[in-house]
Structures are given as C-alpha cells and as structure tokens.
Length: 436
Image 1 (cartoon, rainbow, N blue to C red):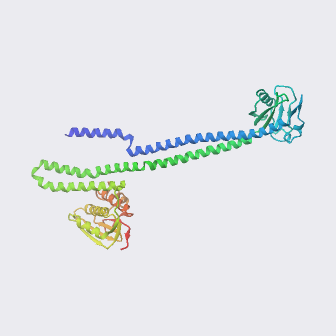
Image 2 (image 1 turned 135 degrees about the horizontal axis):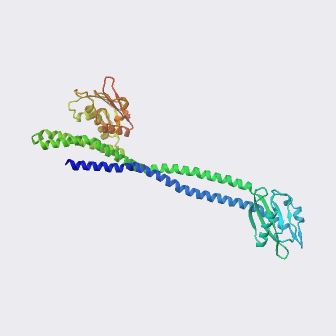
Image 3 (image 1 turned 135 degrees about the vertical axis):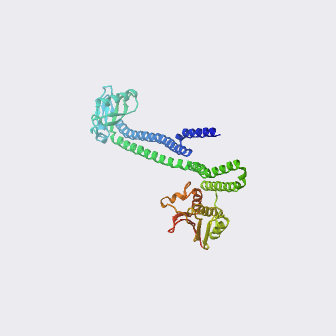
C-alpha cells in the first residue's frame, strides 16, 4: 500500500516539476495580456504607418501641383506674347513685367535653329541653358506639357515647367521653359512629414498604452476568477490538511481497536463538524471574493447580535464576558454573525496561556466589537499578516480572520489587531454606526 502511494506522490512531483516552467494559469493569462497589447499596437501601427505614407505622398503631390500651377501661369502668359513671322518676335515679352519677375523663363528652340533663344531679364536661380533646351526639345517633339525636377548650377532643387508653341502653320517650333526654386516647398514638405511621423509615433505609443489598459480590463474578470480559484484550492488544502489527517488517524484507531469505537466516535463527529465549518468558511470566502455573495443590508442591533452569538457558541470551558451598549449598524446579519463567531472562536482557541483556561472579554459600543483574550499576544511586526490566509497569532486561524476582514471591508469597515497592556491580543471590528 505504501509503495503505490509513494509512486503516485513521486509521479505527482515529477508532473509538477514539468509544469512549473509554464507558470500558473494566472501567469499565462498575464502573458496573454502582453501579447494582446503587442498585437493591438502592431495592427494599429501598420494602419497609422499606411495613413502617414498616404498623407506625406498626398502633400508632396499637392506641393508639386502648386509649383506646376505657378509655372503654368508663366509659360501660358509668355506663349501668348510670342509672335513668329519667319523669326521670333519677343518685343511684347521684353516689355511685360514677367520678364523681370520670378519664376524666370526662357524661350528655347529645342533641337531646331529657327530662332535665337530668349532668356528673361531676371535670373532667380542659375541654371544650365543646355539642360533646359533638352527639356524644350522633348516637349517640342511630343507636343505635350512637361514638368520635372532638375538641379541648378549650385545643386539647388528646381522645378521646371515646359510648354511648346506653334508657328502660324501649326507646327511646333519651340517651347517656353519656366523654372522656380523648389527648396522652400521641399522644406515645408519635410516639416510636414516630420510632424506626421512624430504624430504617428505618439499615436502608436498612446494606442499601445490604451491597448494595455483595455486588455487588462478585458482579462481582469478572468484573472480574478483564476486567482480566486488558486487561492481557494490553496486554502482548502492548507486548512483541511490537519483535520483530515486527524480524522484518518481516528478512523484507523477505531478500525484497529473495536473496543474504543464508542470513545472515538464523539471525537470523530466533532472533527467532522469542524471540517464542515472550515469548508463552509472557505465557500463563504470564495463567494465574497467572487462577488457572488450579495449583501442583504438591513439595520442590525449589534449588541443583540453579539449576545446571541455568545449564547449559541459552545465555550468548552472558556470564560466569556460581554459588556455591550445599544448600537445599531447597517449590515448583513448572516455575514456579520459569522464574522463575530470567527473572532470569538479564534479567541477561545488561541487566546490562552499554556495550562490556563481561555478568558475572553467582548465589548460592544459605537459600531465596534472588541474581542480581548488572555493569550500570548501578537507580534506587532506581523499583526497585519494575521488577516491573511494561512497566518495567525497562535495557530491556523488565518481563514477565520481573513473572512472577518472581508466582511468588515464589504460593509465599509475595518478589522484591527493590537496587544493589550496587561497582555493578550485585542481584535477590533469597526463598522459604520447608525444613530439610535
């Protein structure tokens, strides 16, 4: 019998060792939150990058259209001023104000030599006339408007617009080439691009933060449920381990000694009742944590409730005294009764010195229930831990005190613990009192 059990325990340990690296379900759920945040941020980042690219590209096209519109107004106006009667006549062009303004222009024959090129009087930016003449030749050859970027003599970025013109017989014989400095527009576009990119980075960061918060809120109920499940399982294993072992020992003793069964049966029943109380407390704790337990709030006379609990609780030789003043609170009477019962049970179990009977004093006044014992007291450094699971001042009372704290917090109150000057611990349950 021992061998198979040992084998099963060993297998269980090996199974836990294999599963340990993956972490608990709650840890995996937290990891899922990180992945959801990354996925949400990445998807939005792709969309924002595409939007930024479209905005930058649209702005670049709009800038080119503004430049081309200014150049087209110049080439069209100059084309109308040109006369050709066997030779190029630019008298009207020279007299027009366009000849002295920017954008600058040139009237070029392209590959033909039918007339002498004419350059506007004002050179806003130095340009290679040969390069401009090549563009004019292309426009004359195709008979179409032409726009392009070129570099000035000093490496400046220049936008060029070319418009061909005809002679009286309808033949393309030359082109008007207008040019303007594209650097101001390029600088404006660069500033706009930086703003768009910077804005996208900020939006990606904001989306990432929002995704992290939203994913946290989305998985919070599941995470809370998993954590509560893990706590419930851990508390069940912790609080039932000792009574189950004792019950098994009693059963084995009764099995081996039939003559002692009559003596062991009452102890078995008492231990079973204690196990039932522990399980009931665990379930109440779990329901409170999960929000399943709904508070049935009503006006309760706290002093009467405490007296009822004391009267109904077996003292097992402990001396319990109650000093109560009329005080009324808004509370769930069932949960409040359990909390007071847990405080009393804790004081009677652990509030005694070795060899002495338990002495418990209960004081009720102003919405407060103070339970004082004559035990060894509680270390102030770990007093707060007494309210947590698996921890107590003198034994396994963590679950009972934990339930008391949950009940107090659910009613807007608190549970405090401190040592009395004459010795012993004092547990104080504080609830909002009502006017009598």
